[in-house]
Image (cartoon, rainbow, N blue to C red; front, side, top):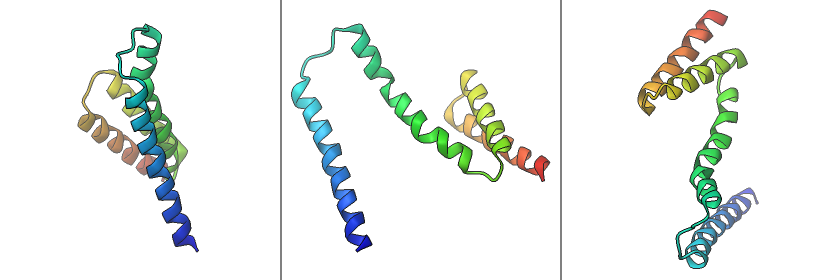
Length: 103
């Protein structure tokens, strides 16, 4: 029973994803001239990514304090303009050191 539920959920997600992409291509053929709409659509991927990633950051380690240290390190290094690999390495190292200090 659980297998059919999972397969149905995957199929529903695939159909919804496909429909949203096809409908956006069919309905919006011209480029948006409104600056607000263009700005909103530009920042949607960043907002969605943050909504997906940030909650898992705080539940991926044993201590919320070390998670906050890693989040702060990632935020600060990305704000300073570092690329993805250094930001990831520094934040992982910060979490590791915080976990060692909290033991």
